[in-house]
Image (cartoon, rainbow over all chains, first blue to last red; front, side, top):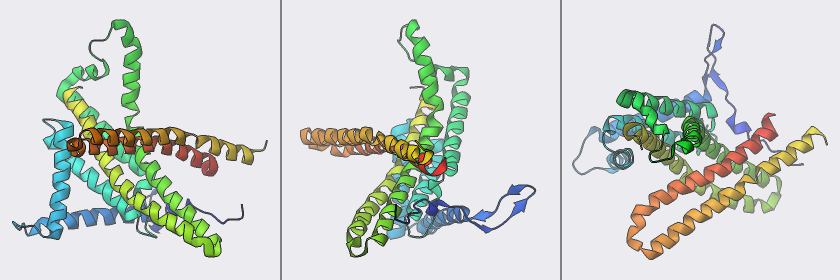
Length: 243
Length: 75
């Protein structure tokens, strides 16, 4: 292949401030920098946006209130009654994933959610948290989640392992879904960018394609944040209401 | 067959996963269109589910793509 393509180079983690404690490398990296930016932006939007508390909201206050109401509505419809205490958690997850995805779309920035370890940490938090909620609320009866009702005993030998497997695979599917979407989208943008750099005047076609993919990526960035949050809600409903 | 060509073939094979994603996404949106055509009032109710289904179907194809990248660039 004559093309010089390095579509995966954009995902490289580079230390900005090297810090070593003992044998551990806890450097402040570009990944950590963009997580910090995301958190600062979310805090700024929500605190400054709602700070004045005007009765007729301005633009910033509207955005802050709309995101709040959107997630509040999502938690209420999908997680059922008794899920209100978990709203702040779902809201934090949604805003963090959304802002990380959207920040990553700025050229030369870094996509935090394209690292599987980041998305897996988020998904594992959801999984462990939901399991703890289930056991606290139902005790040993939480095991009923894995036993479908009204099924012949003989079928249970088949169904219970399937239910168990589909439960324990959740953190992996949840994290890989987000990570693969971000990785594939950004790689695709970089690949067509690489085509554009190597074909001279014909570059207009890959660039136009890149523009279209970029529009799709904005949709995907918002959609994946939504999917991450809504699946968290559905898992919570399983734990709270057992089917 | 040397390792490099085997990798290329493997990555190409992994992209077959996109067949399923294509069928899935087409199915989701065709169902959305026929549902809305039958009952336009239901659009607001079914649209979020359609986009959820779209994202889930798309993700399965991307799992295959992730495997292709793993084969090409990691091993």
